[in-house]
Image 1 (cartoon, helix red, strand yellow):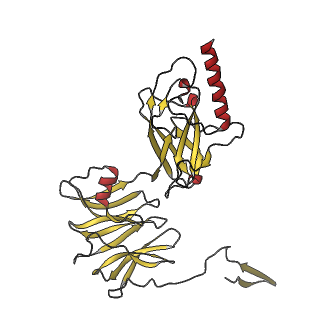
Image 2: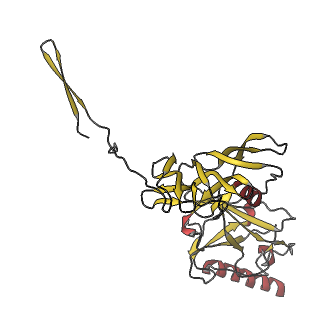
Amino acid sequence: MKPTIALVLFGFVFITLTFISPAGASVPGFTGLGSLPGGDFNSIAKGVSADGSTVVGWSSSALGWRGEAFRWTSGGGMVGLGGLAGEDFRFRSSVEGVSADGSTVVGQSISATGHEAYIWDAANGMQSLKDMLESNYGLDLTGWWLKEAHGISDDGLTIVGYGCNPSGYDEAWIATLPEPSLEVVIDIKPGGDVNAINLKSKGILPVAIFGDDDLDVSEIDLATLELAGAGPAERGNSGKIGVFKDINGDSILDLLLYFDMEDMIIDEDATELTLLGMLNDGMELAGSDSIRIVPSNGKGGLADLGLLEQPYIPEPATLSLLGFGAIFALRRKRS
């Protein structure tokens, strides 16, 4: 935008005022979003993401003259979101809200039970909100009929709307979803089936996090990892935490961590341990593996390190130390 200059006459003094557009100001624009194919040309925009890149609304379509919810992006154009009744002759869906990043959409659609609130995302498509709350989070919504979802918070975790309560009256409701988390596969003491743990051990506990199509282990924030109250230990004098390598032979990068047994808080009745942490983008992750608590033999040998039943010593330095310890233990026994 060009600067605007104004000249003001004040007595015999000319004063020049220059107004300059702020840095990064957007260029004015206007775009028609079109309409879904197959129906009468008719569309209404009802919501927009925080950055303006995603628009949601309603349009006529080939699936029904009553209308279909849509999601529009500058790169993908207008895409229909479908409906809960499939291609039923009563087909209809509309949008009432969208999250700040444009990834989650809520509204109402015709279903087998009538008007019903829905939630949509790219991974799961359009789902009955009530069914999702009951199946994914175990909520008991017996007697409730969630008719319409009318709004969603910026983070996509709080949804509001109205429906018919168990007493038969229309009532406003609010549904709160937990922070999304990623379930990861871990292996305590990789290479063995019995994860024997001696609570009096003063050794280290190796734990592997396996990468897969959904998890790039290099994206894990190592500082956030915690197992039984302890963070991963540094390796020797290197100051590094963990080793990135393919552990299970699937050609996908994995992460091997070491935890100091003396720093861990494990109940004597524990049958599994859960590793918690976060990815670099803030998403939480969690993974569990079974363990078996074993008693100490009181001799301070390999059994007390909790490594006797399934040795997995990936580091040469660690192998040498344990080898010297075993030789020392044998000499003491012979003497």
